[in-house]
Image (cartoon, rainbow, N blue to C red; front, side, top):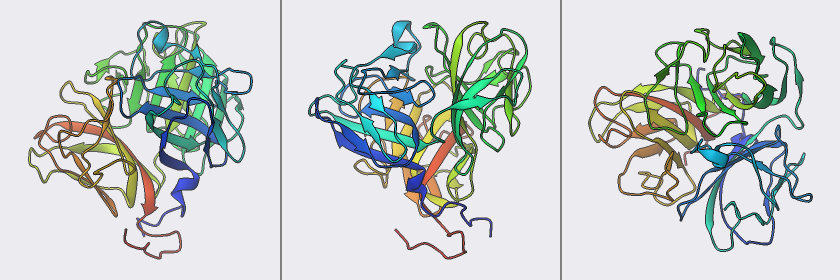
Length: 357
Protein backbone atom coordinates (compact mmCIF):
# COMPACT_ATOMS: atom_id res chain seq x y z
CA UNK A 1 0.00 0.00 0.00
CA UNK A 2 2.76 2.46 0.87
CA UNK A 3 4.08 2.53 -2.68
CA UNK A 4 0.76 3.22 -4.42
CA UNK A 5 1.17 6.39 -6.44
CA UNK A 6 -1.20 9.33 -6.58
CA UNK A 7 0.11 10.25 -10.06
CA UNK A 8 0.01 7.52 -12.70
CA UNK A 9 1.74 9.54 -15.42
CA UNK A 10 4.61 11.50 -13.84
CA UNK A 11 5.70 13.17 -17.09
CA UNK A 12 2.45 15.16 -17.02
CA UNK A 13 3.99 17.02 -14.06
CA UNK A 14 7.79 16.76 -14.41
CA UNK A 15 10.05 15.79 -17.29
CA UNK A 16 13.66 15.79 -18.45
CA UNK A 17 14.42 16.63 -22.06
CA UNK A 18 17.66 16.72 -23.99
CA UNK A 19 17.68 18.91 -27.10
CA UNK A 20 20.04 20.46 -29.64
CA UNK A 21 19.94 24.23 -29.93
CA UNK A 22 18.99 25.87 -33.19
CA UNK A 23 19.99 29.48 -32.58
CA UNK A 24 16.85 30.62 -34.38
CA UNK A 25 13.94 28.17 -34.20
CA UNK A 26 11.85 27.62 -31.10
CA UNK A 27 11.98 24.49 -28.92
CA UNK A 28 8.57 23.34 -27.66
CA UNK A 29 7.95 21.62 -24.32
CA UNK A 30 4.69 19.70 -24.55
CA UNK A 31 3.25 19.82 -21.04
CA UNK A 32 0.29 21.69 -19.55
CA UNK A 33 1.05 24.72 -17.38
CA UNK A 34 4.84 24.48 -17.23
CA UNK A 35 5.90 26.93 -14.55
CA UNK A 36 9.60 26.19 -13.87
CA UNK A 37 12.25 25.60 -16.55
CA UNK A 38 15.87 24.75 -15.62
CA UNK A 39 18.36 24.47 -18.50
CA UNK A 40 22.06 23.57 -18.65
CA UNK A 41 24.40 23.35 -21.64
CA UNK A 42 25.69 19.77 -21.47
CA UNK A 43 28.81 20.23 -23.55
CA UNK A 44 30.33 23.54 -22.50
CA UNK A 45 31.19 25.70 -19.53
CA UNK A 46 28.02 27.78 -19.24
CA UNK A 47 25.89 28.83 -16.30
CA UNK A 48 22.68 27.06 -15.33
CA UNK A 49 19.56 28.93 -16.51
CA UNK A 50 16.34 29.16 -14.48
CA UNK A 51 13.14 30.79 -15.75
CA UNK A 52 9.69 30.65 -14.18
CA UNK A 53 6.14 31.83 -14.73
CA UNK A 54 5.99 33.86 -11.50
CA UNK A 55 8.69 36.24 -12.77
CA UNK A 56 7.35 36.05 -16.33
CA UNK A 57 8.49 34.97 -19.75
CA UNK A 58 7.42 36.12 -23.19
CA UNK A 59 9.47 35.26 -26.25
CA UNK A 60 7.43 37.49 -28.55
CA UNK A 61 8.28 40.68 -26.64
CA UNK A 62 11.84 39.59 -25.89
CA UNK A 63 11.45 39.47 -22.11
CA UNK A 64 12.64 36.45 -20.15
CA UNK A 65 13.88 37.18 -16.61
CA UNK A 66 16.73 34.74 -16.04
CA UNK A 67 18.37 33.58 -12.84
CA UNK A 68 21.57 31.53 -12.74
CA UNK A 69 21.30 29.12 -9.79
CA UNK A 70 24.96 28.10 -9.79
CA UNK A 71 26.12 31.63 -8.95
CA UNK A 72 25.18 34.72 -6.96
CA UNK A 73 28.05 36.97 -8.09
CA UNK A 74 27.34 40.28 -9.82
CA UNK A 75 24.59 40.56 -12.41
CA UNK A 76 24.66 36.81 -12.98
CA UNK A 77 22.97 36.21 -9.66
CA UNK A 78 20.11 38.64 -10.22
CA UNK A 79 17.38 38.78 -12.85
CA UNK A 80 18.83 39.42 -16.30
CA UNK A 81 16.69 39.85 -19.37
CA UNK A 82 17.19 37.63 -22.40
CA UNK A 83 15.81 38.26 -25.84
CA UNK A 84 13.98 35.46 -27.60
CA UNK A 85 13.20 34.01 -24.19
CA UNK A 86 10.50 31.63 -22.99
CA UNK A 87 6.73 31.84 -23.53
CA UNK A 88 4.68 29.91 -20.97
CA UNK A 89 1.37 28.47 -22.15
CA UNK A 90 -1.52 26.37 -20.85
CA UNK A 91 -0.77 23.38 -23.14
CA UNK A 92 2.86 23.93 -24.18
CA UNK A 93 5.83 26.15 -23.43
CA UNK A 94 8.17 27.56 -26.06
CA UNK A 95 11.92 28.10 -25.59
CA UNK A 96 12.79 30.98 -27.89
CA UNK A 97 15.73 31.78 -30.11
CA UNK A 98 18.12 32.96 -27.35
CA UNK A 99 19.05 36.16 -29.18
CA UNK A 100 20.60 37.49 -26.00
CA UNK A 101 23.28 34.80 -25.97
CA UNK A 102 22.42 33.35 -22.55
CA UNK A 103 23.17 29.84 -23.79
CA UNK A 104 19.86 27.98 -23.72
CA UNK A 105 19.28 27.65 -27.48
CA UNK A 106 22.63 28.32 -29.18
CA UNK A 107 23.02 26.67 -32.57
CA UNK A 108 24.44 23.13 -32.35
CA UNK A 109 24.80 23.09 -28.55
CA UNK A 110 23.39 20.16 -26.55
CA UNK A 111 21.15 21.04 -23.62
CA UNK A 112 19.44 19.33 -20.72
CA UNK A 113 16.08 20.79 -19.68
CA UNK A 114 14.28 19.88 -16.45
CA UNK A 115 10.78 21.33 -16.23
CA UNK A 116 7.92 21.24 -13.74
CA UNK A 117 4.21 21.86 -14.08
CA UNK A 118 2.82 24.41 -11.63
CA UNK A 119 -0.60 26.08 -11.74
CA UNK A 120 -0.71 28.56 -14.58
CA UNK A 121 -0.42 32.30 -14.02
CA UNK A 122 0.60 33.35 -10.50
CA UNK A 123 -2.03 34.75 -8.14
CA UNK A 124 -1.98 36.35 -4.70
CA UNK A 125 -1.49 34.10 -1.68
CA UNK A 126 -2.36 35.62 1.70
CA UNK A 127 -1.67 32.60 3.94
CA UNK A 128 1.24 34.43 5.58
CA UNK A 129 1.89 37.91 6.95
CA UNK A 130 3.69 38.65 3.66
CA UNK A 131 1.56 38.43 0.53
CA UNK A 132 3.10 36.29 -2.20
CA UNK A 133 2.30 35.83 -5.89
CA UNK A 134 2.26 32.04 -6.40
CA UNK A 135 1.77 29.45 -9.13
CA UNK A 136 1.27 26.09 -7.41
CA UNK A 137 0.27 22.54 -8.23
CA UNK A 138 -0.95 20.81 -5.09
CA UNK A 139 -1.32 17.47 -6.92
CA UNK A 140 2.42 17.27 -7.62
CA UNK A 141 3.63 19.34 -4.65
CA UNK A 142 5.47 22.02 -6.65
CA UNK A 143 5.20 25.82 -6.48
CA UNK A 144 6.98 29.00 -7.51
CA UNK A 145 6.32 32.44 -6.08
CA UNK A 146 7.58 35.96 -5.60
CA UNK A 147 7.38 38.41 -2.71
CA UNK A 148 8.97 41.57 -1.30
CA UNK A 149 11.05 41.29 1.88
CA UNK A 150 10.31 43.15 5.11
CA UNK A 151 13.41 42.61 7.35
CA UNK A 152 10.92 41.77 10.13
CA UNK A 153 9.81 38.36 11.31
CA UNK A 154 7.37 37.14 8.68
CA UNK A 155 5.43 34.12 7.47
CA UNK A 156 5.40 33.60 3.70
CA UNK A 157 2.74 31.55 1.89
CA UNK A 158 4.08 28.85 -0.47
CA UNK A 159 0.86 27.27 -1.81
CA UNK A 160 2.10 23.67 -1.84
CA UNK A 161 -0.80 22.15 0.04
CA UNK A 162 1.69 20.10 2.06
CA UNK A 163 4.64 20.85 4.34
CA UNK A 164 7.46 22.51 2.38
CA UNK A 165 10.30 19.95 2.50
CA UNK A 166 12.64 21.78 0.13
CA UNK A 167 12.81 25.50 -0.69
CA UNK A 168 15.17 27.28 -3.09
CA UNK A 169 15.13 31.06 -2.50
CA UNK A 170 16.99 33.95 -4.17
CA UNK A 171 17.19 37.66 -3.43
CA UNK A 172 16.59 39.01 -6.95
CA UNK A 173 17.90 42.51 -6.18
CA UNK A 174 21.32 41.45 -4.89
CA UNK A 175 24.23 39.85 -6.69
CA UNK A 176 26.03 39.29 -3.39
CA UNK A 177 23.30 37.30 -1.65
CA UNK A 178 23.51 33.51 -1.89
CA UNK A 179 20.79 31.11 -2.90
CA UNK A 180 19.26 29.87 0.37
CA UNK A 181 18.08 26.25 0.46
CA UNK A 182 15.88 24.57 3.06
CA UNK A 183 15.83 20.78 3.36
CA UNK A 184 13.64 19.10 5.94
CA UNK A 185 16.58 16.97 7.15
CA UNK A 186 18.97 19.80 7.99
CA UNK A 187 20.19 19.52 11.56
CA UNK A 188 17.97 22.38 12.77
CA UNK A 189 15.78 25.24 11.58
CA UNK A 190 18.66 27.66 12.13
CA UNK A 191 20.56 26.05 9.22
CA UNK A 192 20.50 26.50 5.46
CA UNK A 193 22.42 25.29 2.42
CA UNK A 194 23.30 27.35 -0.63
CA UNK A 195 22.77 26.21 -4.22
CA UNK A 196 25.54 28.57 -5.32
CA UNK A 197 28.14 27.25 -2.85
CA UNK A 198 29.89 23.99 -1.97
CA UNK A 199 29.71 24.58 1.80
CA UNK A 200 27.85 22.40 4.27
CA UNK A 201 24.87 23.79 6.18
CA UNK A 202 25.40 27.33 7.45
CA UNK A 203 24.04 28.79 10.67
CA UNK A 204 21.82 31.89 10.68
CA UNK A 205 19.05 32.27 13.23
CA UNK A 206 17.34 34.85 11.00
CA UNK A 207 16.99 32.70 7.87
CA UNK A 208 14.06 30.58 9.13
CA UNK A 209 13.89 32.08 12.69
CA UNK A 210 14.26 28.54 14.04
CA UNK A 211 10.83 27.62 12.68
CA UNK A 212 10.24 24.71 10.31
CA UNK A 213 7.88 25.32 7.37
CA UNK A 214 4.25 24.28 7.67
CA UNK A 215 1.71 23.13 5.07
CA UNK A 216 0.93 26.77 4.27
CA UNK A 217 3.95 29.01 5.08
CA UNK A 218 7.66 29.25 5.71
CA UNK A 219 9.11 31.76 8.19
CA UNK A 220 11.98 34.24 8.08
CA UNK A 221 13.45 37.13 10.02
CA UNK A 222 15.77 39.79 8.65
CA UNK A 223 17.93 37.46 6.56
CA UNK A 224 19.40 39.13 3.48
CA UNK A 225 19.12 35.83 1.66
CA UNK A 226 15.40 35.34 2.38
CA UNK A 227 13.72 38.52 3.71
CA UNK A 228 15.76 41.72 3.32
CA UNK A 229 13.57 44.79 3.49
CA UNK A 230 12.18 46.13 0.19
CA UNK A 231 14.12 43.53 -1.83
CA UNK A 232 12.41 41.27 -4.38
CA UNK A 233 12.60 37.48 -3.85
CA UNK A 234 11.64 34.30 -5.70
CA UNK A 235 11.11 30.87 -4.16
CA UNK A 236 10.72 27.37 -5.57
CA UNK A 237 8.88 25.00 -3.23
CA UNK A 238 8.64 21.20 -3.15
CA UNK A 239 6.95 18.59 -0.98
CA UNK A 240 7.10 14.80 -1.40
CA UNK A 241 4.16 13.19 -3.21
CA UNK A 242 3.84 9.40 -2.93
CA UNK A 243 4.92 7.63 -6.11
CA UNK A 244 6.00 10.89 -7.77
CA UNK A 245 8.64 12.69 -5.70
CA UNK A 246 10.80 12.05 -2.66
CA UNK A 247 12.80 14.50 -0.55
CA UNK A 248 15.04 13.22 2.20
CA UNK A 249 18.51 12.22 3.36
CA UNK A 250 20.78 9.18 3.28
CA UNK A 251 24.09 8.22 4.88
CA UNK A 252 27.04 6.94 2.85
CA UNK A 253 28.80 3.69 3.80
CA UNK A 254 32.10 4.13 1.94
CA UNK A 255 31.54 1.13 -0.37
CA UNK A 256 31.05 0.92 -4.13
CA UNK A 257 27.78 -0.88 -3.39
CA UNK A 258 26.56 1.99 -1.26
CA UNK A 259 23.34 3.39 0.17
CA UNK A 260 20.00 2.32 -1.34
CA UNK A 261 17.16 4.85 -1.27
CA UNK A 262 13.63 3.49 -1.66
CA UNK A 263 11.54 6.12 -3.45
CA UNK A 264 8.53 4.05 -4.50
CA UNK A 265 9.22 4.90 -8.14
CA UNK A 266 11.85 4.70 -10.85
CA UNK A 267 13.56 8.11 -10.80
CA UNK A 268 13.97 10.25 -13.88
CA UNK A 269 15.92 12.91 -11.93
CA UNK A 270 17.99 12.92 -8.74
CA UNK A 271 19.67 15.90 -7.07
CA UNK A 272 21.91 15.44 -4.02
CA UNK A 273 24.42 17.31 -1.83
CA UNK A 274 26.92 16.26 0.84
CA UNK A 275 26.02 18.03 4.08
CA UNK A 276 28.95 16.64 6.11
CA UNK A 277 31.85 17.85 3.97
CA UNK A 278 32.35 20.59 1.40
CA UNK A 279 31.35 19.42 -2.08
CA UNK A 280 29.18 20.31 -5.03
CA UNK A 281 25.54 19.67 -5.87
CA UNK A 282 25.10 16.77 -8.31
CA UNK A 283 22.34 16.40 -10.92
CA UNK A 284 21.49 13.05 -12.57
CA UNK A 285 18.72 12.12 -14.99
CA UNK A 286 17.71 9.26 -17.28
CA UNK A 287 18.15 11.16 -20.55
CA UNK A 288 21.94 11.20 -20.78
CA UNK A 289 24.42 8.46 -21.69
CA UNK A 290 25.20 5.77 -19.18
CA UNK A 291 22.43 6.51 -16.69
CA UNK A 292 22.74 2.93 -15.32
CA UNK A 293 25.27 3.06 -13.79
CA UNK A 294 24.91 6.81 -14.22
CA UNK A 295 28.23 7.99 -15.64
CA UNK A 296 27.15 11.48 -16.69
CA UNK A 297 26.23 14.22 -14.26
CA UNK A 298 26.01 17.99 -14.05
CA UNK A 299 27.06 20.06 -11.06
CA UNK A 300 26.61 23.34 -9.21
CA UNK A 301 28.17 25.77 -8.48
CA UNK A 302 30.53 24.74 -11.28
CA UNK A 303 29.35 25.71 -14.76
CA UNK A 304 31.09 22.76 -16.45
CA UNK A 305 29.31 20.53 -18.94
CA UNK A 306 28.70 16.81 -18.45
CA UNK A 307 31.19 14.93 -16.29
CA UNK A 308 31.59 11.15 -16.43
CA UNK A 309 34.67 10.23 -14.42
CA UNK A 310 32.91 8.21 -11.70
CA UNK A 311 29.95 5.80 -11.73
CA UNK A 312 27.89 7.43 -9.00
CA UNK A 313 24.31 6.25 -9.13
CA UNK A 314 22.08 3.43 -10.36
CA UNK A 315 18.43 4.20 -11.14
CA UNK A 316 16.16 1.31 -10.11
CA UNK A 317 12.47 0.46 -10.49
CA UNK A 318 11.74 1.60 -6.93
CA UNK A 319 14.50 4.09 -6.12
CA UNK A 320 18.23 4.63 -6.60
CA UNK A 321 21.50 3.18 -5.33
CA UNK A 322 24.78 4.99 -4.79
CA UNK A 323 27.66 3.17 -6.50
CA UNK A 324 30.74 5.07 -5.33
CA UNK A 325 32.66 5.72 -2.12
CA UNK A 326 33.55 9.20 -3.39
CA UNK A 327 32.70 11.95 -0.88
CA UNK A 328 30.45 13.65 -3.43
CA UNK A 329 27.94 10.82 -3.09
CA UNK A 330 28.91 8.00 -0.71
CA UNK A 331 31.66 8.63 1.83
CA UNK A 332 31.35 6.53 4.96
CA UNK A 333 29.25 8.29 7.60
CA UNK A 334 28.57 11.41 5.55
CA UNK A 335 25.02 12.76 5.39
CA UNK A 336 23.49 13.68 2.02
CA UNK A 337 20.35 15.67 1.18
CA UNK A 338 18.46 14.57 -1.94
CA UNK A 339 15.40 15.26 -4.08
CA UNK A 340 14.11 12.81 -6.71
CA UNK A 341 11.29 12.84 -9.28
CA UNK A 342 9.65 9.85 -10.98
CA UNK A 343 9.80 8.41 -14.46
CA UNK A 344 7.46 5.53 -13.58
CA UNK A 345 5.70 4.69 -10.29
CA UNK A 346 6.40 1.26 -8.85
CA UNK A 347 2.68 0.63 -8.28
CA UNK A 348 -0.22 2.48 -9.93
CA UNK A 349 -2.96 4.24 -7.99
CA UNK A 350 -5.14 1.13 -8.39
CA UNK A 351 -2.47 -1.16 -6.93
CA UNK A 352 -1.26 -2.63 -10.24
CA UNK A 353 2.54 -3.00 -10.54
CA UNK A 354 3.90 -1.08 -13.50
CA UNK A 355 5.74 -2.94 -16.26
CA UNK A 356 9.42 -3.47 -15.43
CA UNK A 357 11.64 -1.03 -17.32
